[in-house]
Every structure is written in structure tokens, then in C-alpha cells.
Amino acid sequence: MTATVTFDGAAPAGTINFGIGQPSADLLPVDLVRQASMSFFDSAQPFELNYGVTEGDARFLASLADFLTARYGNTVSSDELFVTGGNSQALDLASVVFARPGDTVFVEEPSYFLAFQILRDHGLNIVGIPVDDDGLSIDALQQALVTHKPAFLYTIPSFHNPGGQCTTAARRRRVVELAEQLDFLIVADEVYQLLYYYDLPPPAYGTMTASGKVVSMGSFSKILAPGL
Ligand SMILES: Cc1ncc(COP(=O)(O)O)c(C=O)c1O
Image (cartoon, rainbow, N blue to C red; front, top):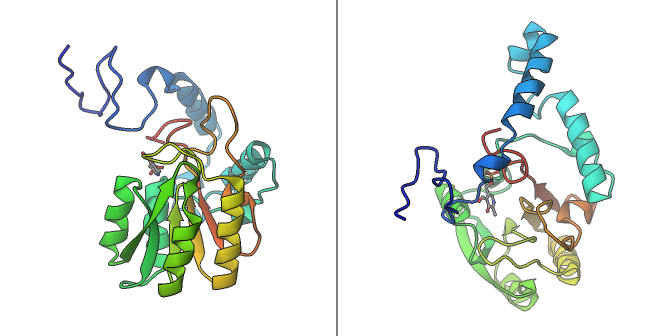
């Protein structure tokens, strides 16, 4: 069959589109979102349609903190959270807040294609760190740290895109140690942390330290609906 991709990027019925990572149309919860919206707007006040606070609606942050605490098995508090329009926008924001044009950032090689574009858009100097079957190469990271002082390391620790591998718990601990010793930030793209079939991946970077050296980015794109 000749596959023509429809206007929304979805493949025709019966075809799996490997060109884009999004839930299959039959998994998108249109009825639940309709019911939730109707129930919300039944009692909504005018302020709901105003700008709101920068970090995100307090009720949503509280509910998100409960969700992450239950899923990560580690207490996440609402004042640690900041809402963005997905992980790509969070990386864009991190590139502005935690780096300046000309700064060096470490990126796994290969990595999520859009990440390169976002980092380049901000004039950042990208240094690639190889990955193997156990995830980010610690030897290569240590070697790169001899000659560079990165503003941050962008890493996809669980179910890497495009490699699919998980960085082991031991390697994650070592990366956190290095970040604390050598003073750089870990920007962890944990978009796939809650998307597994069998074994859980190792604990998210977001649960590993209170030192302020980790920014953990999560998303509902893969587990609920990218359009939300
Ligand atoms: C590693 C990685 N990060 C981020 C994204 C996009 O996430 P979002 O839709 O939340 O921007 C993807 C989607 O393909 C991805 O593979």
C-alpha cells in the first residue's frame, strides 16, 4: 500500500508511522478530555481565562506533584515544578536561562534531532558525547570535561531517542557526582521515563539529588496527548 501521511502527521489506518513519535490515534482520549473540559468550565470563573502565573496554575502544579510522586516513588513538591509547552519548549527555555550564546553544551551523539536545532538556534557550541548499550559513555564524558566547562549536559537517560537504550543507574550516579564536583547542570530529557512495557527504567535524574544540579524535563506528549 502507498502510505500518504494525513494533514496532522497521522498515518492512514493500518500503517505505523515511524517518522514521528506520537500516540496512535486510537489511544488519544478524546472523550475523557471532552468530559474533563466540560466539568472544568461548568464551574470556571473569569480569571481562568486570564494570563495566570508564570510557573503554571497552582492547582495543576499540586496535582502534577502528586502524580509524579506516585509514579516516581519519590516526593516531588509543587514548588519545584514549572510548566512548559512540552519538553522541546523546556529545552529552549533552558538554553536561554542556563546558558549564553557561545557557551558549550554536551549532547549525546546521536540525540533527538530537534535538540540540535534548538541548541544551535541559541548560538550554543555543541560537543558530542558518545553513547553505548549502557547509555552515556562516562569515559568520554570525563575526557570531555578535561578540556571543556559545559553550561549543561543534555541527556535522554531512559529509552533514548534514537538508540532506545537506558543509561544504567550506576552511570547516572556518576554523572550526578561529576556535575556536583565540576559544577555543571544536567538537563535530563525524561520524556520516556513513564513509557515502558516491562521493566522500569532506573530512577529519573529528577529524583536523584537535591543539589540543584538537575533540571528534569517531563512531558505528557507520549503518555496522554501531544496536543495538550
Ligand atoms: C527525546 C525527546 N524529547 C522530546 C520530544 C518531544 O517532546 P515534546 O512533545 O514534549 O516537546 C521527543 C519526541 O519525539 C523526544 O523523542
